[in-house]
Length: 380
Image 1 (cartoon, rainbow, N blue to C red):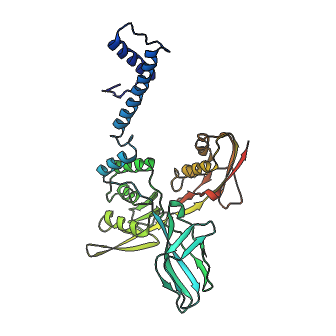
Image 2 (cartoon, helix red, strand yellow):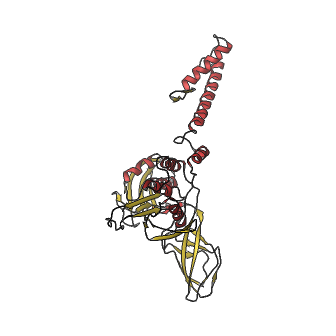
Image 3 (cartoon, rainbow, N blue to C red):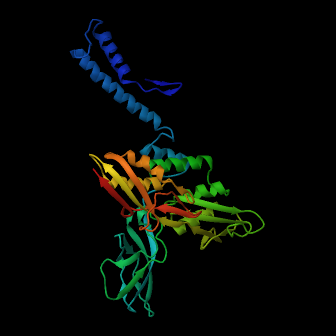
């Protein structure tokens, strides 16, 4: 069907077949046999299939002109008109504290790993000082949000040497990000349309969401003349961020905050803006790693990796401070091939004590899980 005043009206298979038969009889004569099974009837069916196919392609072209229905490269091009770009996959960064033999030179690209196999390479050569200590920045080998590993988890040498005694990351790795999906890019574009970057609370949140790797932002704006219930001083802004690197977040805050705005937080950064030293403060949200036990009756085509990915997709919809409602996971699982029945879902915060109850996150906590944290029990 052509484009109408009511938008695009999709042609049905029956209407396409009627149209094809009508065209054949129009060109070859009204007496032409176009009944099902006849030679011309079969040709009409072929033409009808092509009409439906072309109609679908044309509708996709039409839909890709609009932000809420566009996808892929078409969405990337529309994003440019909004002043935003799709976030690219990004490597995680962490700082390691190393102890060992004084004077030993740790070469750049030395590999350190977690117990779960996440790999990080050192950026520069570093020498262990006379006190037996060294500090080095490392980046993950994989560009993924899953490489934002917890503090005190990068503790192993990939190729152990006697001169290095211990390795530890005192802070969580940050900055790792997946390639932004159409769904997330669409949501971010909508946020930019309704609340563009500016010094308001909504505008600051939008600005930070536009930083590569940032997935969630919470802002406490205390404009009273006294300390608020969270301990924030009078006339201050306290920002909690999930994802992104400290430097990228600080640079964005320096760009968007109003002159004279006072921020508070445990992370302090100095940003040079046209020769002026701008001080910005913020905090990292606390990561709560969840473990899951999922009991499933399976059939043909079952894929355990798809279950684990669905759990991660499900958790990505929760913001800081939300209640993690387990019932919301069921639709994610039942849409997968090979699942006959989900018998039970249990969650744990420590990997040992599991419950079927919903989990309330603290105000500045966000939930995360990894494939290794999801145990799938199958029957069938």
